[in-house]
Length: 135
Image 1 (cartoon, rainbow, N blue to C red):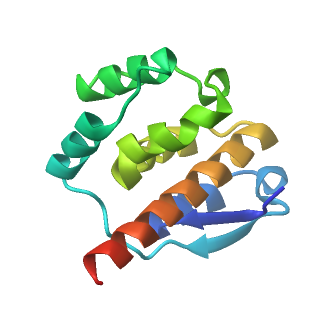
Image 2 (tube, rainbow, N blue to C red):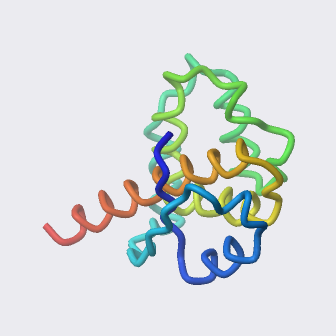
């Protein structure tokens, strides 16, 4: 288990209010990067992505595009190989939205592990975005 959580200051406050049991074993790193995609960039990524091989991902992307609630979808239900494509389409902006929902609903270690995975994905996407805009 990767024990790092990349959280903004606001997210750190929320995480800090959780029980000691849920916080135990996690190293919180401050997420300071703010290179989020524009809505135009997200729309372009959606147009570029070929989701035809992943109908489950296509459903999620359509729901996101329509601004629908994503709580009925689970990343666990998606093929592992489809996640890169999904996260590319969602961008750091979309992953951040998932984090903002999940962080308020943490109930067990599995939830914190999911938060860790999402915070790592967001961290990497923000780093990529920053390097692409500053090169």
